[in-house]
Image 1 (cartoon, rainbow, N blue to C red):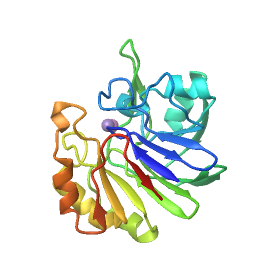
Image 2: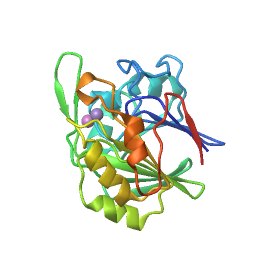
Image 3: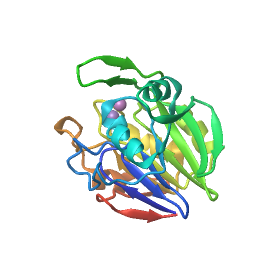
Length: 226
Ligand code: NI
Ligand code: MN
């Protein structure tokens, strides 16, 4: 499969049979090389309800008839807006035709703000373990550092991890280095930085400091083949 990075926390996974988008925040994500009007997806996976993660889910899901897999409260809300959803929750795993999804803990918030300012409760935020053809990707989501990342690293053989380093809203670079050690992925990729001034970070410097496995800062559109 081909796994590519598109700025902020946007990850695309293309397999022989499916295109999967995780947290497709395209409009408002200036670095993103995808176009919300043309982006393809059979499946959209959402870690939590914040607008910089739900992003262009409505447009992309409707145009592609994509299945949206999200934490329950967020899935229910998206369902009321006409999207086809599959609700899950933290600790739960399910085999889909595109691969296996397991929702993990994240220490963060989860709400969606509608255009008129109405704030919708999004339930608990999560991370996502996605296993396809024996390879496991861990999209950590937005989170603080927490010790059960070590448990996830011990319980799962993780090939590729996407770890937030932006600070302010999530863990910062120092904590993210500890997370990379605990998650113990073969490749750790920094995400959730440089989208807004408040989360500006030096991703290449971070990647060079990763001690466990390989740290790799990706340019927009870069592909990792698993
Ligand atoms: Ni968030
Ligand atoms: Mn975020």
